Image (cartoon, rainbow, N blue to C red; front, top):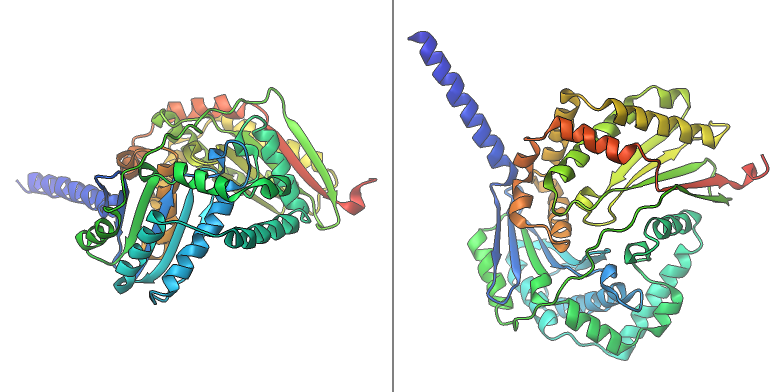
Length: 435
């Protein structure tokens, strides 16, 4: 009887722990769609009286058809109108913005008693967006200055060349801010047409994160956005970029650096509709990252640092970038060879269940909402929604991730990483040019 009781306690404890674990992941996320197509996502946090409010538009530089830089210039004008309008309402917080390949977001961190004024501001500018030629000229000049400053930095030049080489056929290879020639050609009518088509209700997601009652927050969104007329537009940018047959090597000598800098890019296949393959690749990349950091081969080759960034599920760039610096290496080619050899060995041998579990824990932890990183969570969600991912899939991803298939992980690793990088970009100190 005692043994039976102990077993029952163990079973109940297991079930409770699973429930608590699931509750910590996405228990406090909720999505609701207004009748006019605008989406609202609410994320509850109990650690602060501050709210993060994000106005997210599934519109970025890849939505530009002819002239580059439209999405970015529009966002600058739009942001200025939001802040000019918001300042008159005295809610005491500056709105910021960010434009990517797939989305434009406008966000503000303010006290929760100001939510009504913030949403009123977003709703007014969205419904009645207007600007003068002077407004556009001022923002054009700011973008122009930024482009000129970026063009003086060798690291920026090489990153731009790498993206063009990686996406030679696609808008993903263009500069989000556009270029000086295109910027000059953008007219006020171009901006208005671009906004009218791409800033449509079915592309709008409003995210509210913080310590506030969900129904109250959603009621305020309805108050200021239900009056917006129903609009929609197709998103036609989602396509699978082609892959290079061989590696493209880019080299630049620079007097702006003191040690060699190497970036290696792999194209990650488009997994929007292949959840298992998306998960398998993401788990392997996370496991490989830990293994590369710990492996002694990098100490032997005296590589100072190695960092890995990747586009999960191909929602943005759709690539993996491994960045290296090698201050004491006599031959940069030796460093590249050592790293590539190690990556291929890891892909060939595969990862263990223990390594997969550690990678899954890292992925699941990154999807848990805690007060200090609410912007990261909201931004992560907005990016994936901007690229067409389903909300239910997003909130279920931590649970889905725990049900991985180790064989599929290692099969995906071999399929992707048996190939060399699509692009290898190397910046070398100017004083090594003739060595």
